[in-house]
Length: 274
Image (cartoon, rainbow, N blue to C red):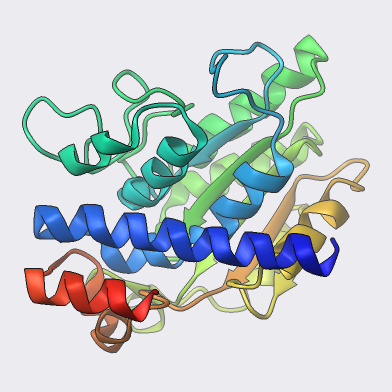
């Protein structure tokens, strides 16, 4: 990826971060921390990598994306609105009565969402099923998924991991948002994951560890490397910062999982992201 493309993605990430902060800020509460830690991965996927068509969201051979950590839905909604799946004004309806944009993703309510999320662990299972279906249909689609590190404490994640490796689903590329925090504290304090890269390798996956999960170039390069896998699904570990880009959100640590945000804080955050 050339420098101009890299800079364009950087600018897009900042814009999507602003949209996300603004929509949550207008609501007054939301999952800011986990939204802000996955934005660069979403931007690389939707603006550089995935074979999708917002004018034909149900295109049969499209690549698919599953946000297994569904509480980061507002970040995905910002991307989908900017891509043209629905009008950007709808972001102001986030999690309000009769909204099409609930706190957690719902494929029956939001155009462009490929899978409903909420119960942690289910998203990656669905993504593995999509990848298997794509193999059966031979439609050459790639299936992408983002899971959380706290979510990785769920047994269902590892059942999906075994299934994907068993069927050699090399069209499945999963990212772990490895920000090391979850709702009640640090991942290490609550249920440590140990050497996460070696765990995934032991389950038969190709593993790529990215030192800076907010670097679009590193994310893009990792995806290209993953697509060269001949017989294994790929796990890309994104070392991220929960609440990245907004000082007072970062400073809250685990408290930013689902946090209130005042009008003054919304304005401050938008200024920081100018």
